[in-house]
Length: 202
Ligand code: SF4
Ligand code: SF4
Image (cartoon, rainbow, N blue to C red; front, side, top):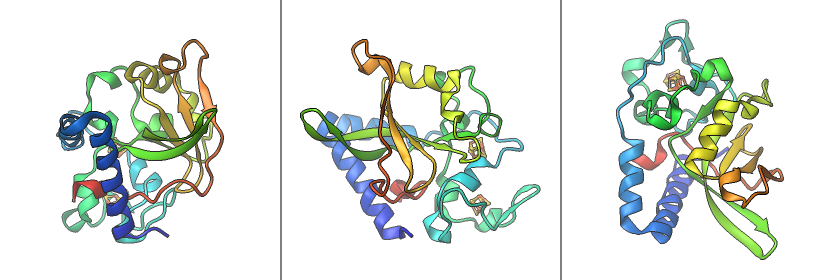
């Protein structure tokens, strides 16, 4: 089980890699993005409360939060800080998600927080910044949704398709593969870093 301090350390790694790749401008752009107010209403959706891990509660990925109830969150006024800070990409409602369906209808949640994975390429190991897509393990093919594939290709960012904290694979879109189409890079079991939703907003 990951801890809050591991999650914060991990978030620092993401910021450091962003700074290395694009300087402070990219770091600022990222911080602004993850703190945007949502444009869309969650309605009856509660999928993130099940799929995403929450360090403060010791809640693992893919497990229904003990505080979920018919109306949403039973402890809403006192919910953890990471729950307060959280929005998924669909809820933010930016142009890249135009036409996409609400997460509970398509069985995946796109995190606004980036992650880092180490992949093995022909010329050695490389660290990649990846968009995180939390897929409901009961719907393992949900990542094939054309709306999601189109979005990943348009933003031209590798995606980590996560079935939990330790299982997933990296998906590289055609816009990054020079005519080789979609590339799936293995299943980096046990290499996925700990993650807490919203941890890098602390
Ligand atoms: S997954 Fe997105 S739309 Fe659904 S409850 Fe969470 S934030 Fe709201
Ligand atoms: S504490 Fe509330 S908002 Fe946070 S995961 Fe649980 S049900 Fe969702």
